[in-house]
Length: 477
Image (cartoon, rainbow, N blue to C red):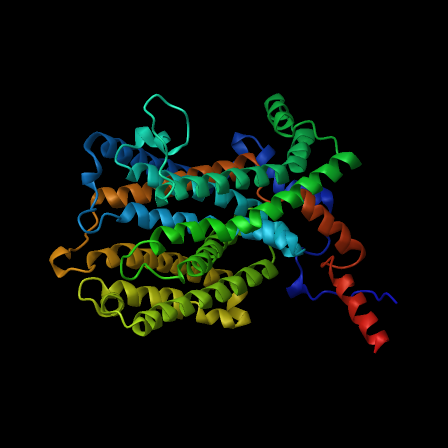
């Protein structure tokens, strides 16, 4: 016997009460379809800051190409410095978008619908930054295409044993699938923008991007089939891409890197950093555009729970690393662990990352903190800093001291290291601000489905299924 789902408490809702299809379109699409004069002042301020940082980025690249990689702090033995640190950091941020979109879709989680769109965009923009770093790190970035297997008169062919080639194929696959997944999900919303456009340019733009969408039953069937197939393809990529990045380190013989825990440890860290960035973007976005009824406290609460869970896995990984170093019985591994923790040069970085990634997330055990936007924003920023410090410890601190004391060295970053890194925020900020101005930042079609179900049954479309299962189990007993 079927039972009606109980009334969903306000704090557990994935959409505010009384939302209608027209109301959702008005709230989400107003910033997109409005003219230049309707663009809020904060958007122009943010775009100005982002363009300034983008200019710094372009200047840094010009100086890098004209002078060479000697402008960085890379040296012997620290051949991988800030460029690889920032590469791993950005690729980690790009993981939460695909996890939210693909994994939560496959697991039928309705709370994904309000945050998956801008999280997917975040993934693409973060991967753009991450993908440029290995190319710039080549020293001769203008011949990066030599990494591709293509017929040529020089007889060149990629060295498939090189981690550089692994990165090329991993990032290329991840980026292409993420863009395709993001765009497929946009098509129904682009058709809505096409139909509501007020200017000829907008109608032409969105009609072209909507690919002739007509909303027929056949179109919806093909759309949902393609969307689910891409979700099923994207979910394993979340695990494989950062595992590939981890293998860049794990296949070496460097003490502190040659460790089988690297792939799962890196994946957990990537999702951890990714959800921190989702909160950093979601909290200001819901306030700036008045999206509190669409990005509800449940979204913040669930994102904080996932950030706490993956953060505890990362902290567990830190402990396993130290345990493995002791249990291995190798003096090189034991020394590297001690150098990371108590080293006179960079020991501070380890303890700061423990504070940022281990201690700062502990308030998330409390529901009141998980539902406090300001506290969540501060914790998410601290986590992002901590995850950068983790990459610094793994890459730079590990390379300063290897097997022979005679080859030990130190690492000091330069102005151009930091200018290139800060410039990537300009790339990310410019792309993200253009995205929220030109395209809907929330999946309006999926939100309308939730609003329709909420009006007739309750906020959670899967609550009735769970209630039916409970009732059947009780009847059987």
